[in-house]
Image (cartoon, rainbow, N blue to C red; front, side, top):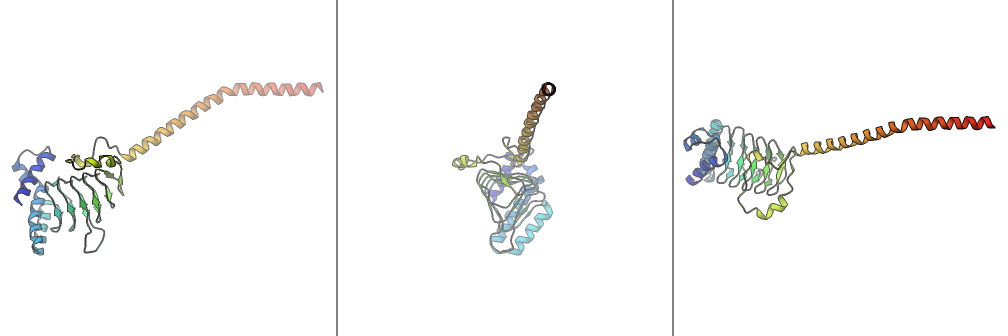
Length: 248
């Protein structure tokens, strides 16, 4: 347990450039406090002292703004940044090296007593405000964008964004062979090579409209250029018709 606590503190320095000292982390980081309190509450939960576990977790919620059910399983080197508004359900499983930002919900969609909350595999990053709902699995090294609502499994190394969430990084199939490597951390589940898919689609549409407008302009110029010639041809045709009529 003490080894996990040391790792919980050490991981802050890797993922938050604002951290300056161990004393600062221990005294001013609610995400760290929430994990420390959860470790204690979970220990009581495992020996079937359920009420005591719930009371300790409830105190932790008052102090930190982070609500973690004592039945939830949380691995090593997990980082909850900022923390306020995070909710983690009873049957949720968070494996090692995951990162959760403020406002994240690992919630259930069923009243069944069994597994009803998500499982986050190693190295998952969940952006601020994201909702992961139901007994689904977020694959190792996957990223969930801020404010996404995820109700289906997300493959390893994939990126999911939107409501409902959709996969925007199809490259995960190629990268799957290197999953065993240490996952790369992306703050707020955002990478430099992952443009907003909605913006990307709108940009494609705007480019198509621009090209269409250019084609219309060229056709209008051609029509205008042909108009004088068309008028001249019409005048000649009328003159020819009148001459032919006179000759008769």
